[in-house]
Image (cartoon, rainbow, N blue to C red):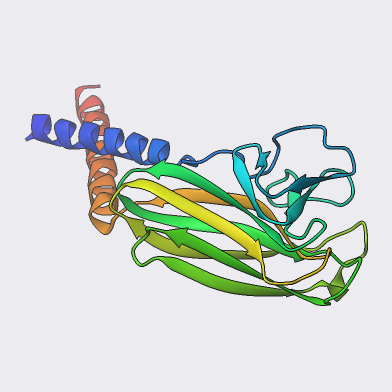
Amino acid sequence: MKSYLKQVAIAGALLAATCVQASAAPFTDGLFNSPPGSGSFQTVAGGSSLGAWSVTGDSVDFIGSYWNGPAATGGNSVDLNGNGQGGIAQTFDLGPGTYLLGFYLSGNPDGLPAEKSIGVTLSPATPAISNSYTYLATINSNHSLNYEYHSFLFTTTGGLETLSFFSNDQGAYGGVVGGVTISAVPEPSTWAMMLLGFAGIGFVTYRRRASAMLTS
């Protein structure tokens, strides 16, 4: 019995360690720290690269010191309108499972429209994601931005996924994205195995202490 419980405890501990490793971001530069040293801001034309991201549409502004990134994650941010309406996209590889995608949204307050609108797509997730988000930029000042957190769950059978952020507004003052994260969500059966493993560890520890007290 004791040997079996030890095996359960070890299995649970290994499974917990595997889950921690799987929760690491499977794509790169979600904080827009590459390339570093952008200065105040840098306009990047459509068809170019921004670190691991591809720039789509007209252009985007890669923001350095012009304003702050999200306080919760740090890093830089991207105004999805550079000289005109633009966006960013990244294709990455995921293992099968359920994931949580989160990002921080703000808006460039330097020009109209006051309410910024962006789109977010992710495919071929199950179901494919196509969401719109709005942000009222009048709560910001030109060098100090507030951010709102948004997230959604998605499931994939594994393989390549493409994540896109894009502006729904014309002009040079758009929605601002920062702090993009993707993390694995353990399945209910995984949580059950983890709890069973931890319970086994606790029971083995308790029995060892009890035996030590009886023999002392």
